[in-house]
View 1 (cartoon, rainbow, N blue to C red):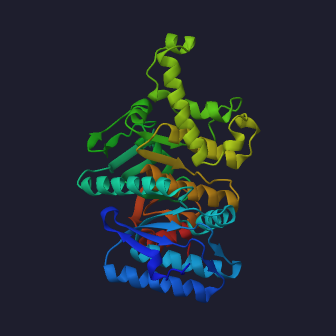
View 2 (cartoon, helix red, strand yellow):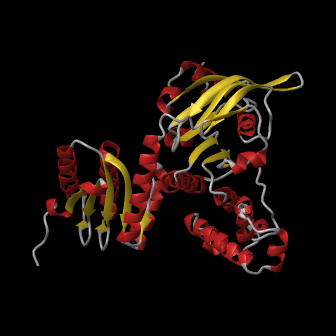
View 3 (tube, one colour):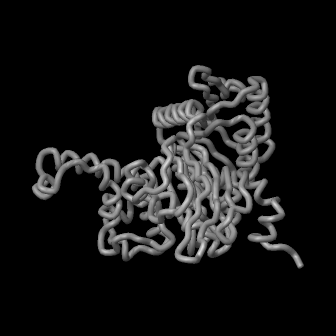
Length: 392
C-alpha cells in the first residue's frame, strides 16, 4: 500500500472551519522528522490566511522521547499563529499521559477523546460558543463600577472599577489585605457595598444575596475548603445541584416518580463532572479521608455542578504542590474550553496567573492600581513596586 505524503495527511473542512491532521501510524524518531511534517502544516496554514480549529488523529502514532520537545514546540507555534482550538483523538495511553503532563506544564488544553465523533461534537460546541461570544460582544458580561466597601471605619475597597469579558480567564492579584476576597464577596452577594454598581449579563444591581447570585449563574469556591467531610465525594457534588432540583420535600423523601427521575438526571450530570475531573477512583470515598489537593478538586466539582456562567475561584491552588497546581491549571483551562464558563480567580502564584490569564486586575490597600493583559501588568512599574517588589 502506497504511503501517503505529508500533504495528503492534511485536509481542510471549510464548512466546520477545521483543519484535520492525520498522524496515524507515523513514527517521529527525531527532530528532523517533526520539522519536516510541521513545515508542511505551516505552509498549508499560511496559504489560507485564516485561523482554524484543529482535529488531530494520533492513532498508532509513535513519538520518540528525544522528539517530544520539538513536537510540542512546533505544535504550540501552529496553535498560537493559526489556531482557534484543538481536539485530539486516538492517542495511546502513553501518548495521552505525555500530552496531559505537557498540558499542565505549559498551560494548554489537552482535549483528548477516544473517537472522532466525540472530537467533532466538542468542536461543534467550541464553534457554537465562539459564535455566541461574538454576537454578545455588545452585552456587558461583568462590570464593576465604583465599588466602596467599609467595615465601620475600615475601608476594604475604595472606588474599584473593572470589566471582564465572556469566555475569558481573569485574575485579581495583590498583597495580603488588598481586598481581593472582599471583591469576590461583593460580586456574589456575601458583602453589600455602600456605594457602587455591579452589572452582570446586562442587569445592573447595587446589592444581591448569595442565593440570588447562584440563581443567576454565579458559583464560587473559597480559600478554606468548605466541604461536608463525613459525606462521600458524590454526595458533596450533589449538593451543588440543589438549585436545579424542582421536586418538593415529600416527593424527594418518598423517592418515587418525578423525584426519582429527577435525581437520576442529576446523578448523570455529577458522573460527567467526576469523569471530567478524573476522580472516578474516589467517588464513594468520604471527603474527610482525602488529601488536600483532591479535596480542592472536589470543591471545584461542586461549583461546576451548579452549571455556572461565572465561576469565582478564591486561591484554588493555595497549599498545593507543583503537580497538583499543574492539574488544577489544566482543569481551569478545560472548564473555559469545554463548558464555556467565564472564570474570575484570585491567585498568589504569579507564574500561574501570567500563564493562564487573559486579563489581570491588581489591587493594593483596597484600590485598583492597574489592569490589563498579563504582559501589560507584568511590566507596569506601579505593580512591580507595590506587589512584585523592586531591587534595592
